Length: 212
Image (tube, rainbow, N blue to C red; front, side):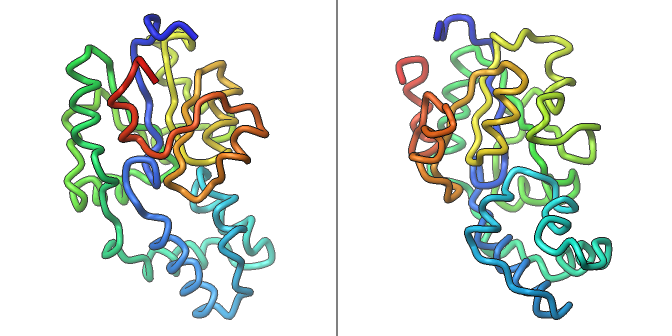
């Protein structure tokens, strides 16, 4: 890969820039209890990371009232355990100072996304754009999720950084280079088996870009 061609880095949000996985799991379990639905395994929940909440609920409980389950989830979800991943703001500032555009592209809805940005004190001003699931037509792993960003950029000038296989497949389907991070529970072996070339412990290691 020729790193010199890279103009912008796009980041997933949950478990890429912030730790939110435990909050999601607990909210799903609380939803299951309140609606008397089967309790899914943590592995099943992790496999669904990277897709919108509505689709996650449909996948976990295809026989349930999806709208009611989503409403229940949003009511029981707590921000208390949502935290910024170590070194994120410093890493983003260094990348920005090195002349790279920064973007967020996530399956989280806009309202919750901006609430979590405020709660974790993520330096939102460093990003050229912040795109939530309810702001675009397509969703991961569909490569067209990047359509808005590809209006002004070539795929070869972009990198997508994410923690899930849905993130990886979306980037692959769009012809965009991908960097996997292991802060979301997905194993390095799983990324490698599916063809990911670069796997890092966390976003923090991007401070070494472009020498990674």
